[in-house]
Image 1 (spheres, rainbow, N blue to C red):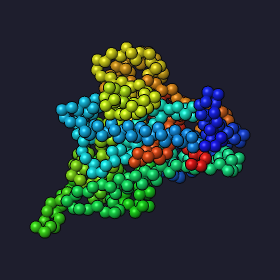
Image 2 (image 1 turned 180 degrees about the vertical axis):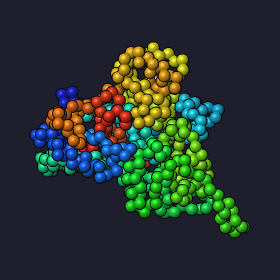
Image 3 (image 1 turned 120 degrees about the horizontal axis):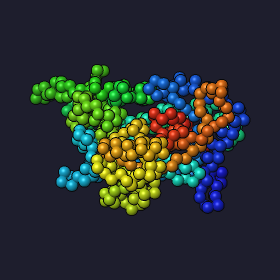
Image 4 (image 1 turned 120 degrees about the vertical axis):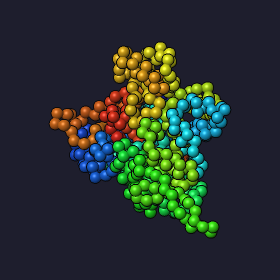
Length: 485
């Protein structure tokens, strides 16, 4: 590793040079009067892409995360180590017998999600698609996990496209001219995701009575129409079609099992197929969040599980990925059960990088969590940051109400992991009254993508509050990787 990539501080801790390059990027933007044109051109570009959120333009930052190879190595190790831990917890969940199902009882998934989680998928990979979120201190290389996500983890299209938008700015062109010999690359998160989905399908042990497993499957991306990230799905539909795969979005309500007669040596036999309004389905990418499935049960969800159970369709992720995507998983990793599942090194990793987390229940003693600034409360089955409350954001009376509600709903309370803030250049137009060179620091959160257990890229979001979620005015941030591997 070159001296340009890592310097050593007085305390012998690595200082990642990517952070210095981020400051240089902001300095160049200030020299350019805030590069107002670059911000506007980036927004114009994004408006022409699928990088949108529920039909609206995404809020984005022109200032990118810049990771050198030392930082990439840290993030890769963080993601892949957590991926192995997620696999181990999932495997133990599936192995629990009815007589000794202590792990299942700890997760306490509602009906029918526990039943769904136990349905075999027909392939070996326990968690094909995941995104694990961390708070990463770019100065020291330390990190704390925020949450774990699987299957339909959003942000892939936005992450790729915002990175491209950054490169359209005058600031980036000047930055590039100052470092002509510095290799700069981007992650291809969406491409890696498509690869993994097709790789899983290739290993699927089809046991359909039709014996049908086409090389170019008919793929349905399944979610609730009112919840789906429609623009991202449209991006993936295009990418699958470029690979010769017929893909479309399917509302989970539109799934159904259909019987038909197939000729056989001993006469016709009855076969079944999963289909939607467009026809039969061979491969399903389930993006419907299981907790939403539990809240909105429908015949389509039952048809999906029935088809998976009968081996009629390959469902990437199945429902068995859900236990490790709940907020409960961190309390499991801190519980006595973890010692029977993880190695000693993995337990040390958890205690170093996973905030202390406790599952609450009605009637729980809440006194240990009264010091509100030390804690954050989360619903067990929440997603997109919904229902997450940091003690720092409320007064003492409101915090008491939040704790009571969290306990009543079986949520978790977690040690608050302090976030790392960096100057942020907001993309888009700059109001006349604003100083275009004032780049206020915003808190960062990195989402580390894992496909097939392998690190595949970073989705950074930032914001000015103590929680960073879809509904907390966050910015989406591009990612540049510098230096040769």
